[in-house]
Amino acid sequence: MSIRRAAIWSVSAQYTAFAIQFAASVIISRFFLQPAEVGLFSIALAAAMMLAIFQDMGVTRFISGQPQMQPEALGDYLTLTIGIAWSVAAILIFGAPWFAGFYDQPGLVNLLHLIGASYLLIPFATVSSALLVRDMDFRGLFWVNAGSALIGNVTAVILAAQGYSATALAWGVVVTALGKAVTAQAMRPVAPRWKPRRDKIAPLLRFGSASFLISASAAVGQRSQDLIVGRLLGITATGLFSRASALAGQLSTLVTGAINSVFYPAFARKRDAGEPLAEPYLHLLACNTALNWASMAGLAICAEPLVRILYGNNWAGVAPLLFWTAIGEMLFIAMPLQMDIPILLGRIRTLVWINLLETVAAVTILAMASMISLEAAAISRVFYGLVWWAIYAAFLTRLLSLPVRRMALIYAQSAISALAAGLPMILILHSQGAANVGLIDLLAGTAAGGVTWIAMLFACRHPATHEIRLALHSGLTLVSRLRRRGSSV
Image 1 (cartoon, rainbow, N blue to C red):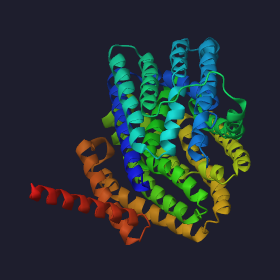
Image 2 (spheres, rainbow, N blue to C red):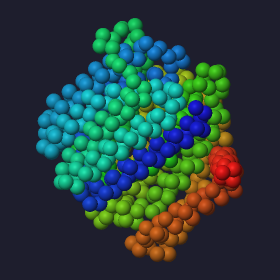
Image 3 (cartoon, rainbow, N blue to C red):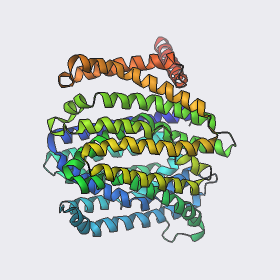
Image 4 (tube, rainbow, N blue to C red):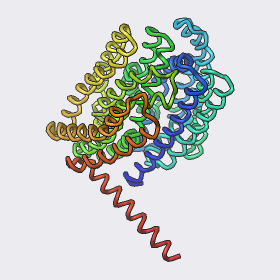
């Protein structure tokens, strides 16, 4: 499968999964659950994700990125993954009472038991999904991710409507894991080898030991947010904070996550062929910032009316938090594949130390801000984003010999285009006031912003316009083919 064809399937999966998750979150938040209930689930999920660093051990990156694949070792990899994941499940299940006592929230026990049960299922999708990524079979991966997202979120909505409170979200996690395991195994069946061979899993363990340190520090930096806010500011504040973070993060993943997932195996192939990575990385950087910055600028600008329309007045406190988290997301996408590129180039040890440094910064900045207020915690995401960008920009610029002037020009072009994209919405808010802006106004502002964004991309000769031209050419070619088929009939 070509890179662009793979990207189409990957983007389709991201958009479909996002649409399902977004619709479910809106329905559940607006009609069934309060911020405190969502906050309780967010704390339980964050605790599980902190422990989940033990579950993968770099299996996905190892399988999809290794130059020589050993099919006979796949069963060994799966057995190792099962052993680790089931250990995580045991810790979550048996440690639930202590964790609930630490937060003084008895309701966490049942949530952790359910989320822990999902880790009994997760490993059966891990190796199979990694094989799909390696083969760039993103069509198969579409059915794995989108299908499981559908059944999991539908389950959560149904149970929330029946009054299951935060437990509905936990059951959604279990059903999602089940759906992903069944579908992935159907696509690429892998059977565990009950007596794994030491010589087969040794390379994975060596890779995984360094990958584990990276995953551990990344998990602490990313997953500790809800734990810190929950401990210092309470479960209602956690619900508001997690909703803002999730909305900004999901949109960011929707816009650029699919592109990055395709480029990882593509960069691995270029590395194996001895090709330089600087030019394709600059192109990826340009596409990421062009798309992400415009989207996040729009999200920040229309945060107040968007939250009111989607979630209702009970969630009004999300709006000011969403403004700052959206701006923070712009910084976190400014150096894409910051983990994957160093791993592909054999700089994993250096990456470990760099990752630990930025993780310390993440926890320290958020903890200090959370002692002030909830909005200060959201603002801290921008300060942390600046630190994050400075660290990885310096590292990757040296690693790939990136031209600093070219990077600065791309950033400037993307920033100008993002401002152009947000201008129509700014004018609408200024003329009508945020309290009077409705859904039609938001849709009109978004459509007009898309037009001004594309116009500015071409006006400033942004590198991403190359992809727009290719997309238009492909669309016109498809229309022409369909017309010829219609005329022949």
